[in-house]
Image (cartoon, rainbow over the protein chains, first blue to last red):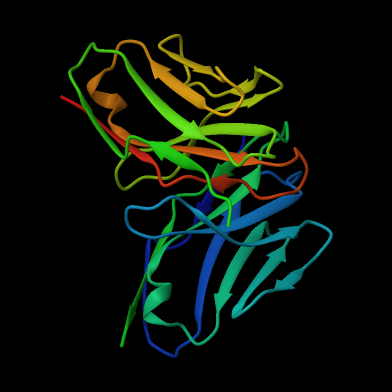
Amino acid sequence: GESVGLHLPTLSVQEGDNSIINCAYSNSASDYFIWYKQESGKGPQFIIDIRSNMDKRQGQRVTVLLNKTVKHLSLQIAATQPGDSAVYFCAEKNQAGTALIFGKGTTLSVSS
Amino acid sequence: EPEVTQTPSHQVTQMGQEVILRCVPISNHLYFYWYRQILGQKVEFLVSFYNNEISEKSEIFDDQFSVERPDGSNFTLKIRSTKLEDSAMYFCASRTTMGDTEAFFGQGTRLTVV
């Protein structure tokens, strides 16, 4: 079946550190993945996406890595800032391609 | 920047009552979604809607739920007879195409069933 999950429910880092948030997925046929950020009381906000024909994609201060061999996805945030504190979800396109399936989320706490 | 808007932000309702949650998707988007998030849990897919009909629905989306696009701009989720376990944040989302594009989410409606 389809399921997307994250390894750790919480991650605490110091301001300026690099953060790595991990996600494991089970559907080997998945070909599109997204990372969302959800701040308290708000809806999920798009951060970055990656297609399965890529191993790595970089954005502003964020990098997503995809390892299809072990079905693992990670989000790296460089020079983490207090404003990065939020819950981070990975999501994959479902088999029908009609919806996104979300993982459980990792709460990132950044202390200054 | 265009955004998905949802109303109300918070709805409290008695168990057994009907509720309608409203959403205005981004204007040039063609695909619409409802998701829900029970407190502290992951975001769960409810239903997708395209070309004025449901394209897919999850197991959660039973006969108590319905969606409608009544006037070409609003997209509504109706829960016919609310249960305590329907208490959650409900998010509307939209996207331009079915392909590999992100969905844009609204701020959500917090539904509390008492």
